[in-house]
Length: 227
Image (cartoon, rainbow, N blue to C red):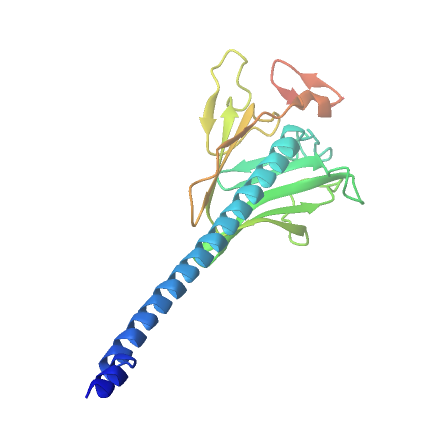
């Protein structure tokens, strides 16, 4: 009788085995879930770092380029207007390509948001300005660079005075730029991605005076006079 009891003490019953296997399965499930969560957190952190780096690089590039915008004019158009156009969701300006770009030179740029379903792509198009142009080109065959993807909204505002307004008039912010003779004093760019917080608002001051692109500047009427 004692030998039978000793044999039972060294083994496991079916119930004990089922309980042990169930506990082992639960522990494995918890560990697997934790690993999945850690993996998703790691990937999410890497994606966030990439988004922040892309945002910083894009804003640094735009700040430098727009600040150095050139007051190039359409010499054959009436009143020789600037090659510059500003709307609430689009900006066109002339600037030089970065020195690291092989082809270099002065280009006409277009900053805009191209809608693609729910979100959109922040793009920068460029083309060689036509010296004989009498109106702003349509950028139909322009080269395109993708600045950021997954963008919900692009808003642009301009700080300055009304066309032909005197220097004594108080400047204000507006959602489009209508003065063909002068660049705005400040340009404000806001970008809101589909996910995450909006980008820091970018405010840029074009450093070139508009009269730099004129052979003769009329300081009273604030326009480029023909000579």
